[in-house]
Length: 73
Image (cartoon, rainbow, N blue to C red; front, side, top):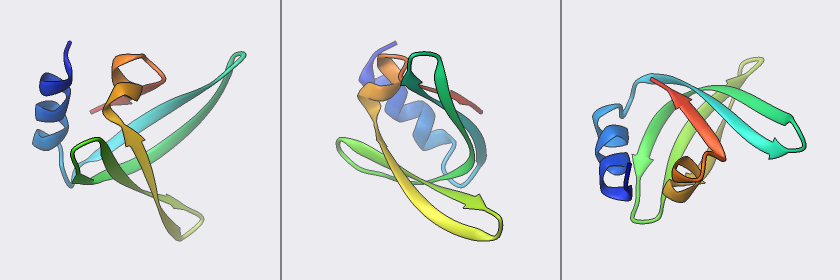
């Protein structure tokens, strides 16, 4: 997988629900149910919801390529 294919897959899934598993290291993970909102040159934004509060998180495309985050579409 390369960065261009990663961007295309994300673009195809804008405004769709995804599950994100973020590797914090040392077998620690954070999981988010999110909606992909916007794509930029180096990062993309997702909207997460926790107990009714919405917030925005950003990730880089490199995070996907290095398996720091895993996205289930």
